Image 1: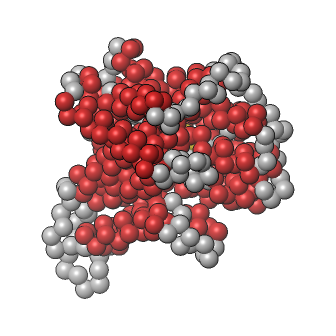
Image 2: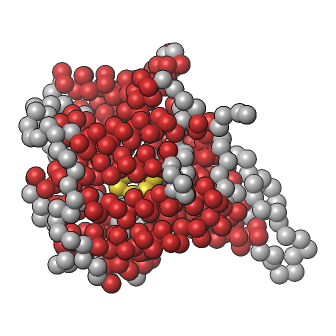
Image 3: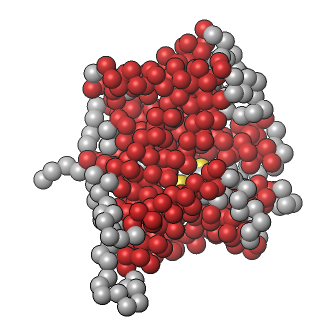
Length: 441
């Protein structure tokens, strides 16, 4: 019996080295939401640190559940879980509305349980995701991440010194060049560690040029056990729950897209049952996250690019990354070491990683038949809708809240538009048509 690509096992040393690459790839993205929400809640530095370590710990547990699975939970695919950006704006609104974090946590618990109940319904939509749709969504996932890589390359935030300076962008370009060099001239082992090695060399160079500072690594606690309900008991407010339920629908859509994307990249089939298990894992960990002072979880698209670029398809490698995340949650010292890696270094690696995701979508779209049908128009329109919130974030600001919630995410916008247009043009018989156009892909 042949082994599925995702079930390949490697020696522990290799697995944890490749798992560390996954952690470094998503670290900047995973700590940003708790920092933004915590700052909006007026937390002090110690409390912000608590939110960050909680995010790392919960994300590690969620990754382990998704990659290794339990009966009925976990897709058993190489997917890294992390705090989702999708609900940040809504949670900031809730936390500044007078209820604070307890209202946010209560809304997350209730809405995630609703998501857990409706997860099986998403299992029935797999037939609406031919290569025409999956290729479009995968391409938009990659394209929607490029602004993240650009911000990292410029220094992380306009509030930080040196934002957009040639020194920052030059360091990012050097890191990118190292990734390409290791992939071009390295052995198979070097190619699979290209991102990690490039980040290590880039960080050393940054130290010598004064662009990296590890002086804060030794400051603060070395060991900290994850706390529970440190900000009080959750408060269940109906309006807040309704708002977060809309976010959960977006998360379910995005995670479904992530499951389909990674399965396409590794060449492993997914069916409705597997999607259901993946979504259940997502929703269960999201419902439990507030108990440990954290926020909703979803599959991280950044790491799909790493799987595509390195060719390491094993879910056990991702599980090793999950173990590292759990340890980072227990040992703030390790988190401070990782946090000291310069943002431009992450940005240089992010350019090729996120571009790889987009390229994987283009490769899938190459399988689609564009002759005598509307498929080219469907792809063009769907990608355009996916890019609108990226190039013009304020586009939907004057629309009702539920419209902003759904379409503010380029991934969910592209997914909904491509599925809808594919149904209209490829599944529904046009009036007076002699025959129905066969589904794309």
